[in-house]
Amino acid sequence: MRLRSTAVAVCVAACAATWPALAAEPLTLDDAFARVADTHPELRLFGPRREALDAELERASARPAYVAGATLENAFGSGAASGVDHAELTLSLASVLERGGKLDARRILAQGRIDALAIERETRRLDLLAEVARRYLAVVVARQQAGIARIDIAQRRRTVDAARQRHRAGASPESVVLTAQAALAGAELDQARAEQQALAARQHLAAMWGEQAPAFDVADVDVLRLDDVAEFAELAQWLERTPELARFADARRIGEARMQLAQAEASADVEWQLGVRRLQASDDFGLVAGVSVPLGASARAQPGIRAARAELAALGIEREAAGLSLYATLAEAHGRYRVAQLEVSRIGDDVLPRLARAQASAATAYRAGAASYLEWASLQAEHTAALRRQLDAALNAQRALIEIQRLTGQAFLAGPAPSTQGATP
Image (cartoon, rainbow, N blue to C red; front, side, top):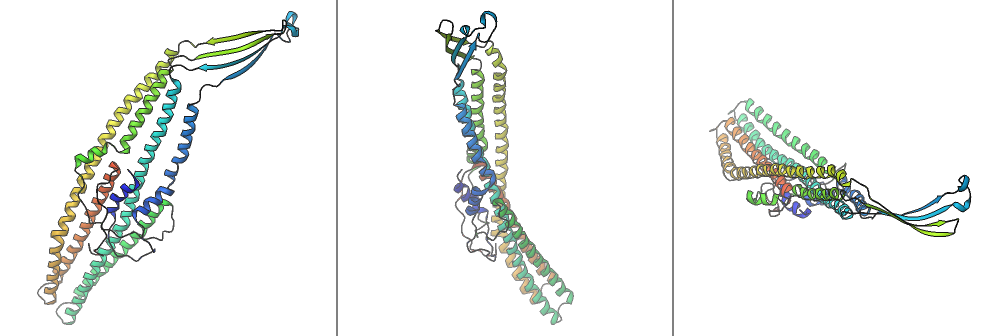
């Protein structure tokens, strides 16, 4: 559950594409993680909260205070008690003797809240890192979409050139040229839209650390690299150690501390007082001592004990429900990753090579007059659609991987390989 561990696995969510560099050093996913960890207010908020809980622990560790008192009796009265000689002055020291382990129960409860805060911070940190990874992924996927659009533009331009040659030779009508030009315009629109989406995605990413005018580019890594993840049974074991479930262990310790404190309330505290009294009339001194114990402490403590037991029982049910929900989410994410991984692999190995050969054959046949424009254009469209389908599958896989990382907090993939493919998937 370390920052680097999450960065290694989720960094696979970046993809390769050519893009004009906006900064000297590209922003890596580790850099984005570090910026969020250093500046995000939701994480900085845990500092003051920890200070407040430390103060609560210090206060909970304090023993009952000593009370110094002074009592003047039989002074300034009337009749026989009107003289100063009848006055009595008592100086006393009093406190409370706590019984039932109340001090230890308070300490355990305050310390449990501090421990729970650390788990809560780790859970929130992983949530934020997952959100950073999703936004980073949106930037690089938009760049990849622009790269696919450039491939489509190059194909359509070759089609326009070939259509013009055949039109000049009188082998095809002008409508074919216009149709090819319209298809080229559509591909250019796809590129412009993808580039605008990349700009918007960069702004969305920069908002995670409060940057309003982002001047960075993201690093190039391979989005189509989808390594095998661990088996689901192993992932389910890691799920038991996720912060989302670990917080229930801390919550149970807090609940048990509350139970102990409620049970301690059944033992009545002893209030004691010790002092000295001076008798003005005889100029004598006497010892004054007193002890008082409230009655019915056990009965008054029973509602608190029952409430603490009920909270513990409810906590166990909540933990079971959360475990089932996380298990189902992990199973769904693992299945999506495996399906998308298969789709990316089959498209890259089987579909795209055949479409590339078919497209090249159709181009040659069209120039020779043995194939129509529609046949060539249809194959171009299928090739572009296959590239986009492969990218969409990779995007689904990377999102599922990010979710698996968020749930387990474990690194189980090797680091991303440098991109060697340029704009072509």
